[in-house]
Image 1 (cartoon, rainbow, N blue to C red):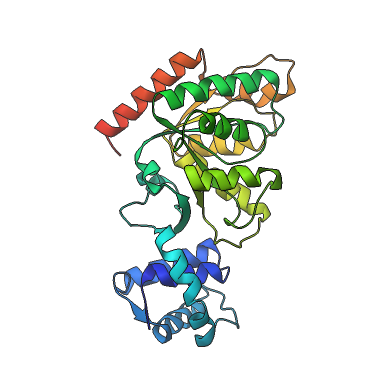
Image 2 (cartoon, one colour; image 1 turned 90 degrees about the horizontal axis):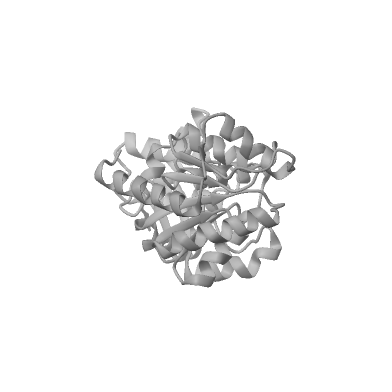
Length: 303
């Protein structure tokens, strides 16, 4: 039985190896010219032992020949719904971020990654002002064939996904911090399943992976990195949305922010971003034109 590089990485992911360990293993395959060939289970185990001796991987004592063989049904089922770093379908924009995902699992229409995209994020404690702004902005994006990307959290994320979905199928992309068979937050379970069926659901984690604290930050970097621009609707001064906004700045993405009243707690983070030089959202129409121009220029002058 031979395993491709993707299959080997899926196996490691199923065994809960870390991002760094997956990266180190793929890097070893590339350096030893094994990334484009299939190898035996014994050869894979030998590779792991080599890396373990170099302290590049922590070997799980349960990772045996038989354990890998027993994983084959899961690997076979996941292979068609997995993209590996370097493959044709892998989003080019992720190649420019410091920690590009090694594997991305998906459900839905993967071709949505070829469309124009914009990330829309914001607070979970969205106000009426933020809700209406999100709805108007997302409606214009969808009407102009721009995919709406978000993280499937409560608040702005949920409103962005739902608004797009209510307008048409194949209009939104969700990146989640768990595997597909887990839900966080649980109240978005039906929404997650609908996105997986009629739109596109992405995860860096295998299906049964439960949420861990660091998964949110890892998810946020992917939301920021997948698009040329990130839209922040509302955010308090210590909002998690600011983490995504900071990633956008680090990744040289355009950052557009909805201004708010100085007395509103959910506008403090946005106003701070504006003070630092983020683009102010003047009107939904102008914002959409800016995003269309940005995507057009990106297609003419790719990185």
